[in-house]
Image (cartoon, rainbow, N blue to C red):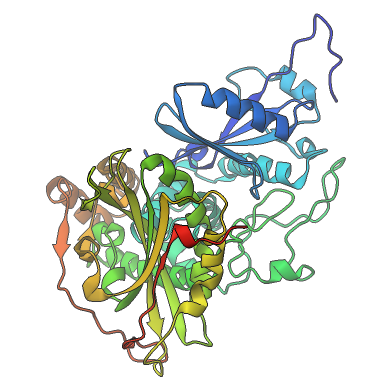
Length: 516
């Protein structure tokens, strides 16, 4: 309850709690930092967002302040001294707990802290609660961390890491790894990694993954809140890849995952399991697991989405909006009725422009120059499809971006189909470590070092190649040039087919944009 304020009463301290990858100590050097601000009972979310955003914008150490108060989980995004931060808000009804909390001590979030919170507040609080539970329940915390680091790097390299784009994010992979660790309490990272890919390549989705028993009754003093239940809730029944949070109220942390993304994840899990099994036999090395895959060589046709703005400042908000709507485009294209499967690759490729607006290659442009990112969706067609008009799949997506109130003449979007031979050559190379695919050498060697330390005691065969190659080959960037030709997939109902002359090409003109 709120404390009576007197001259001798101290104002309750705001507790700042880290969670997510940073809290678990599995963050990549360039990753965002997730923070939760636990505030006193008298502080409202509206007042917190308004006042803090004003303060942040007045601080010259802070850049790119972007408050999203209406999001599913309200967040303030900003960059502080070069570090990207996602800040959530929740308030406690018990001011005494905040008042007694000592600076520097871990603030333990408990069930009674859910009292008097709305659903957005519960979602904000549960991110930190899940991180604390994962750390306290892991049978071997270092084995959990090492395995999770490896899984995240694998997912990044293979274009499978982004909750916004309908794949899995950090919390999703953490829960999946935690379940494997719980089932294999004494296993070391190599065994856990193999069990991870083996288990989820065979998982019968939408059977939910649960770390603990689902509790449907609220803790004492807490109002009843919606708990994930596919039997009674039609919306929950539509989820294709439920990965449930272990704290009350249990939620599906992977509610964004769509069928096209699940299809890619299932295939990737299976391929990774095969590679790890070969590593165990000594016929492959760890490099085969972490290197870039054959995605752009396995398909013949791609939908290219081009997000453009006149400068970096205009680009940031435009990019965030378009990125958040790309799931609509992916879902719209994937149609059994039209004989089309959409295979998204979860990565953006930045193109560099000079001050004259001329593209000079791939990489970041100067802040005052044109800024552009490319996103790719591979297209697979039924064996009876010889021509296809994909306009049916882009209509809802275009409606959303066309009617965004923040769009101006300096922001543009282009959609077009490319044959394999028309792809930028940089996509047709096989990468081990490149900054333009967001994996630094520091991150790569950190991952390998953790693996070498943890695997060496378990099986020399598993790490022999990794250690040798790290000393000799992986000190430089490895690029394997590929031939400019498509590879043939096995025949079947989803064989690759030529589109013919009916090629979709859409470019949106800001001047003709309908207004809301």
